[in-house]
Amino acid sequence: MGDRRRRRLGRIGILGVVGLALSACGADPAPSAEPAQLEPAQLEAVPALPEQADRSAPAVDVVVPEVTPDPAQQELVQPAIWPAADVVFATPEEAAADFVSAVLISEGEPVLGEFLQGDSRSGEIAVLFAGETGDLDPPQEMGILGLRQIGPTDGWYVIFAISDGVVIDAPSALQEVPAGTVTVSGEGRGFEGTLAVSAFPPGDAAATFDLQIGAGGAFGDLEPYSVELDLSGAASGDVVVILVQGDTGLGADPGTFGAFPIVITAPPTETLPPTK
Image 1: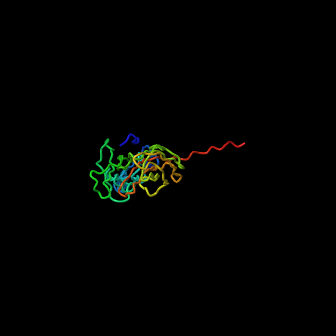
Image 2 (image 1 turned 90 degrees about the vertical axis):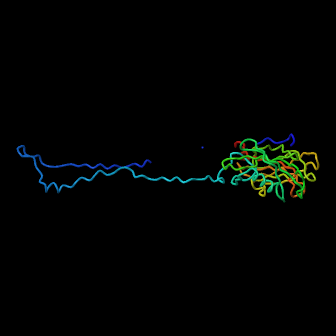
Image 3 (image 1 turned 30 degrees about the horizontal axis):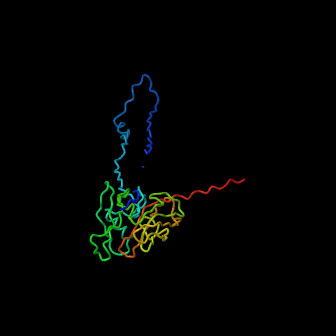
C-alpha cells in the first residue's frame, strides 16, 4: 500500500400494627370481704385469649428474568461502515465478505486474503481480484479492509477501506459535519477517469443520500477530484459512509476504493440581528 493510507481508525411497605388494649372494670370490694373466688364452672366460661399472630413475612421467591439487550436499540461505541449496528457477524471474514459483495463488486464471489490480527479486537483483510474467470494466480491485491470487534454487540465490523488508487483528503475519517452540502475531494483513478463518490448509511449501500461522479486519473497516475454531496437527508447523530470508487467495468473486480465513516451534527443555528 502507498504512503497515503488513512488514519485508523452507566418499600418498604409500611406495616400497620394494631394494638389490642384489655381493661377490667369492677367495684372495690369491702375491706372485710374475702377475695372473690371463681367457681370452676365460671372459669370454663372465660374465653381464652387468642394466640399471638405470626407477624413474620412469608417467604417470596423473586424471579428476575434474563434480559438480552436489543442491539437495534443501542449505538456502537465506535462508528463503523459495515454492517448496520443491529447486524452481528461472528467473524471478521463474514463482515468483510458481506461488505465486498454488497459494495465493491456486482457479480461473483468475494476473494479475500487471510485475516491479519492486530490487537485482540482488530485486524486487516486484503481484498483480492482473481480475474474474471478466477484463473489469476496469485490473485491481485486491490486494497485493505480494517475490521474491529465493537460493543455492545461484540460483532465484527468494517471500520475503513483503503487502496492505492483512491485518496480522500476531505472530509477526514470520523469528522463531524453538519447535514447539508459536503465537499469530498482528494486524488484517485478509475476506468476512463471515472470515480463514483457516494454517501450512505452503514449497512445499506442502496439507501444513498447522494451519489456524484468525479473525474480522476484514467491509468496509473492519480489525479485530483472534487465533488459536492448533499447530506441534508441525514439526521444529527447519524453515521454516514463516504465511499469513493473507481470502477473497472468488470463486475468481479473491486477496482480502486476508499471509504470511512463521518458523523452528522446539527446544522449551525442562524443568528438573527437584534431588532430595533
